[in-house]
Length: 378
Ligand SMILES: Cc1cc2nc3c(=O)[nH]c(=O)nc-3n(C[C@H](O)[C@H](O)[C@H](O)COP(=O)(O)OP(=O)(O)OC[C@H]3O[C@@H](n4cnc5c(N)ncnc54)[C@H](O)[C@@H]3O)c2cc1C
View (tube, rainbow, N blue to C red):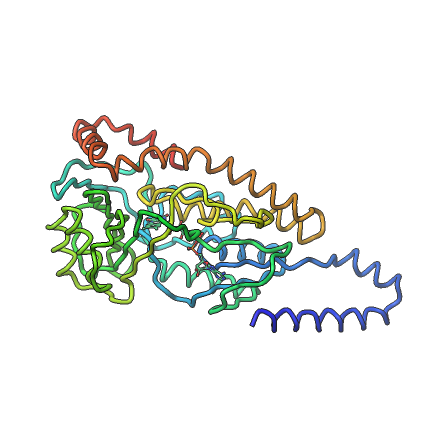
């Protein structure tokens, strides 16, 4: 499929070249000055990072094609709780209205081993929207803006200039994590976000559109837990000492197609593919923040916004590919350094037993520097 597309492009280029030779050199030079040719950007991966970048580039008239291995709409393993999103980035991409009419979340209730431990309010509201809806909304905008989309196409082409890797989590052997998600229907909550902490795990429950609640957790992988897809979340909750919650989830009405799991990933900076340091990476392919932060999707938007100008300059021939990639890399490291460091610091407080206890005690005493940690994670 990819080869066919590349062949077609070469044919078109040859035809353009042939007809061009008929034009007078002078006219052609003038034409080139007035309408400089723009090189095409290829985006590999149509998650939030890839699609947002595609939209931002199309809005600036840059030719873009996007390869996505899956189809739209589709559910994804994600808490669907968007916190700390940068309005500036959304505006820069040209999608500032994307969350209009979506549920906003402020109150949170924290539970430890089944008991409510403390409550708190988010310094700024978060947005609840399913990836099923969000990714579809955005991909429609990408196509409406003139982007070329190839779905059901896993990109395996050779490494070339102009390719952006927005392929999500890098597969990492020996990872100890599994993420599990499911949409629960008509599921009452005690706060906008219920956060449940159990043995080596945590799970968030929050509303998205259409009276659905997204249940999504990060669990320490337990190979001994074996269950059918629909039962996987309650089986893991049970195994983590959250029996009551397991029962609540087990007996809830579910959207079966939304019940998914992912593993083989690590949090933090993602590895470069050996020998392919020339890759420009954004989104989860660059760095993954702890899901508890609710900031991963915001980082996908910010990464896309950061890459737009350098890629526009490369496309217009004003910047070498090497420099374009280095600029994006440097800017993203600077933008996310603090967030990743703080996330790595907090993560054990949600997953390691003695640190969980400390977190709960501090929560009960209301001495968690909530606002400062919130800011540091954004
Ligand atoms: C358990 C869990 C809970 C989370 N909860 C939250 C939350 O509540 N709030 C939040 O903000 N973030 C959350 N996140 C993080 C958030 O989901 C990610 O940060 C975000 O999805 C990253 O977007 P992305 O575009 O980089 O990657 P993805 O959304 O993963 O998209 C990558 C895309 O690339 C495609 N692809 C891969 N390889 C190829 C290829 N070779 N060719 C073509 N296509 C390819 C894939 O099919 C995929 O569609 C959570 C993550 C996990 C694991």
